[in-house]
Image (cartoon, rainbow, N blue to C red):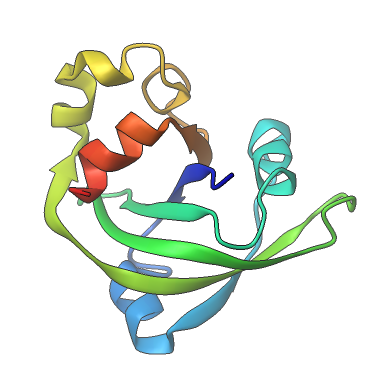
Length: 128
């Protein structure tokens, strides 16, 4: 069964536009134990929402997991590929205002960089 996650990135370091240009990238450098556990649980084909932090603070694009290298390692590495921009950017203020995200780690653990999403949350952001 396909799982859904949100990955946060600082656009000045690596933006969704960069991912779109590169088509694929290795997603690593995550240090939070909970975020690492979420990464280890991913499988190829899982669907992703890319969220840009900093001045953007919005979900902006869709991607998918190509592979998980070192799922049992201290620091797993994901290979992800770009899908498409979201139909509209979903700002953090809108996410926080939605009852759909009331119990989400996205809202409750603001610094968590890899967040599981329910299918409904994914659809809300992706417009699917």
